[in-house]
Image 1 (cartoon, rainbow, N blue to C red):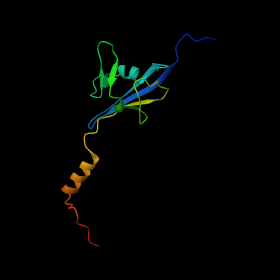
Image 2 (image 1 turned 120 degrees about the vertical axis):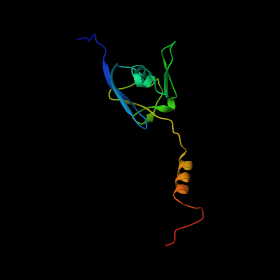
Image 3 (image 1 turned 30 degrees about the vertical axis):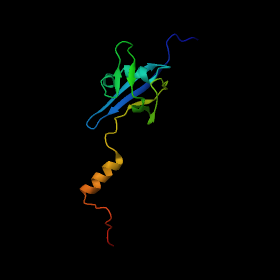
Image 4 (image 1 turned 90 degrees about the horizontal axis):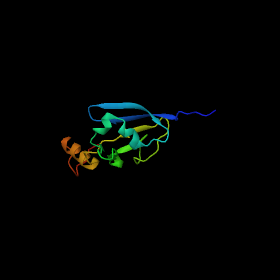
Amino acid sequence: MSLSATATISVSVIQASSHEFSQRHLKLAEGSTVGDALLMVEFAQTSPVVRVASPANEPEASESFVGVWGKRVRLSQVLVDGDRIELYRPILADAKSARKSNAIRQGYRAGRTKSR
């Protein structure tokens, strides 16, 4: 028996900011890519991470800011059923600088040790 309908997969696209969380569930044709999914989601098109180029209607993204289940992927990555596409925010603070600022703010001075 032959099926005339193409197989579909279910995926979700999420994006979190410091004040908002967006999630969209999609049904896509089997063989769809991360880029295909991003074209289907409104918040991904307005994200500072992803721009949708008008002429070719292809997403442009810094691929270091797109991942599937916590692993960075290319926009050409083929999706499988159940994948979760994540749009990552750029890191705004250097961890070393942040620790130093916190230590200074809390009164730590270099060379001083706690007495026991």
